[in-house]
Amino acid sequence: MRLLAALVGVIIILISPAPADAAPALRTFQVALTPGVDITVPAAVNLGAGLAGGTLTGQLGRVEVTDFRGPVNPNTWVATVSATLFVTGAGGAQRTITRDRISYWSGPPVRSTGGGTLVPGQPTAAQAVTLAVTREAFRKTAGSGNNTVAWTPTIRVAIPSDIVAGSYRGTITHSVA
Image 1 (cartoon, one colour):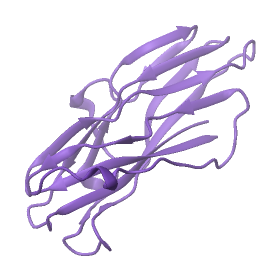
Image 2 (cartoon, rainbow, N blue to C red; image 1 turned 90 degrees about the vertical axis):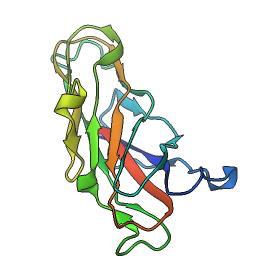
Image 3 (cartoon, helix red, strand yellow; image 1 turned 90 degrees about the horizontal axis):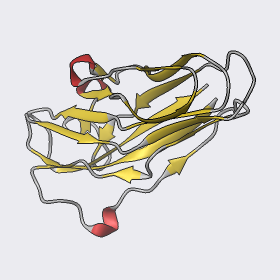
Image 4 (tube, rainbow, N blue to C red; image 1 turned 30 degrees about the horizontal axis):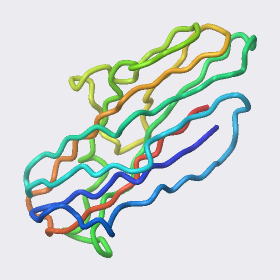
């Protein structure tokens, strides 16, 4: 399994956008490796500003799975997505946005090469799922040969009405196995 995490930018609640020095950094780590399958994710995303009690929606940027296992048949894989809490300061009551308030949808493929059947986890906003638990983002269900698929997922954050103003940071993690 290949695991990459991208710090989902700064969510600003009731204040102006974060200063440049507050830009989030890429955090990457690998748990295990499926030889011949790789995933890339955007380094960081700033979702902008929102109001307490409102909703903030933004795209994460391009996520891409590359499978270069060639004639392995079938060379199927599943890409998953998960999230951390979004917090400001030390977190705690009224300084945390819980994962059940973070929704995700993969959208359709924006680019694909090679053969096989590629299935988006959530093709449209109507199929959005919360990231309270790990979810399927994309899947290759059949076929052999080298292939690539890319998608541009969207995140929607339901901002609690009693939240403290601040810069909120969280991590969205995509992995493939």
